[in-house]
Length: 277
Image (cartoon, helix red, strand yellow):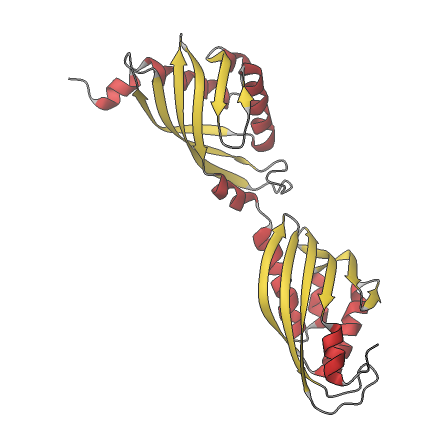
């Protein structure tokens, strides 16, 4: 008796899929059109594909973005008539060559898996259902990890008073959007940070750090310090102070190029005894 594996290999639906995959890997869209029906419907989460032309457009985009190739791991015919459907497991590989999920091209190799059900009618595929590991793909193309590491390194350098180490973490066009001061460069910011360290002898506690967009990181921090030198026109009295800050960092190539800050400056001044309007 034939084995289930040999039965699968001899199935028309499996043979049709192999024809499709060969054409897909060769980016031979004329050959793809020979195995996909004109009224083809793709039930793929996040995509609206109806008709052969739409599907070919999607394939071209996938090839342009990734230079995509597929490797068949398993194909199982199911359904009436010896298999009017085929279930496939495919490993997809490529290179991140264009913007995906909002992340610009990184040139990184990527791979993910997809499980598909294809329905055959009159010798062509007319319907598909697919589930891709898109979360795994996003993690491969994401800049989140690099951006988070940069902002974490900024916090560490400030805490350890390694001011010159900030030079490698900020881009040359850095801009600071802070209502408490007007800063035109990283060098000016370093002067302000050092002056605050000298006056308030503070350390930074990182309360929260998380990506907010393909190019942004949000940081919430609490400062703890002691008033040891003149600040805001107030003479030092050694009192302990604390205040919070919510900061948004925008990064390019894992370097900080812009920052927005909302710090509890009024609360700090109140603790120092500064008269507020």
